[in-house]
Image (cartoon, rainbow, N blue to C red):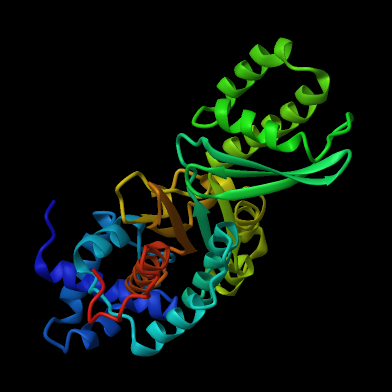
Amino acid sequence: MELTGRKKQILKVVTERYIAAAEPVGSKFIAQAMGGAVSSATIRNELADLTELGYLEQPHTSAGRIPSPKGYRLYVNELMERKAISDQEAEEINAALHGKMKELDNMVAQAGQMVSSIAGYPAYSVAAGKGSVTVRRYDLLPVDESSFIAVVMTDGSRVKSQLLHSQIPVTPEELPALANLLNSHFTGIGAEEMGQKLMGLASQLGAELFMPLSLAIEYASGVIESSAQNHVYAAGQTRILAQPEFQDLSKANELMALLTDRKDNLPVLDENTPMQILIGPENVNEALRDASVVVASYDIGDNMRGLIGVVGPTRMDYAAVAARLSYFAESLTKMFGKNHQLPPKEDDIS
């Protein structure tokens, strides 16, 4: 059933008042908000209709109304006015991002902390794994006769290194030949093919070469597998306890457990979706049934992307959160881009 303009106006008033005050909204307030143009009796009838249609809920018989998840969805899709971030908010975001870390993993982890501070809700950040990762280059650095450092650069230009210990002595003079062997036979292929090639070379190599070579291959395989996985970092989990809806610890317990111990189950975006708002039951995870999630994506480069999300009550200020998250995601894309420049503040957030 298509709602009339008046019903939509009443739903908008109820939703925005409830977002601001966290208390059921009555007909008297609605009449005042609409400038007295509609009588209280008419408003009560419209409220009854909106409740029957599932857009509003009445917590108690004598109480006012609050939006249902269906009501929030209509509000977000049709009634919510877009907000632009203020100059001060833009300056705060830019100042925070100017202190970015050099390591990608550190930057992604830090992004969640920044967003939580800016939005005032728990937040999480995700380094979305690249579907197919291979090694571009190996370097082996001598340490002592039984140890060396393996340096692995992936095709996404991520560089990882680790100290490896060999049970068979490895001289510094042997490492260049091993590195050449690795770069000749073990680049541009997946972890499984690496293992197969290593077994194929086993009969051709002595133990003094096979042992350090297998250590380097084992480490490189781990780097590949780790790079292909999503890495999730959560921040500001206790901020949810400041919301009236979650001050009952028994109600907040499941959500806190998700944010703390089961972060990998937090929502991620489909490909090519810049932003998504999931309201209450729209979230697959049962722990989020009384919460909403706003998730945005940004480009890391080399066909990789990151995600940032905000978790709050269904009563969250969707317009404000979406505006801040959109600007933050755009800023991160700029930083990971070639120019490494922060975007100027725009008059509107699209």
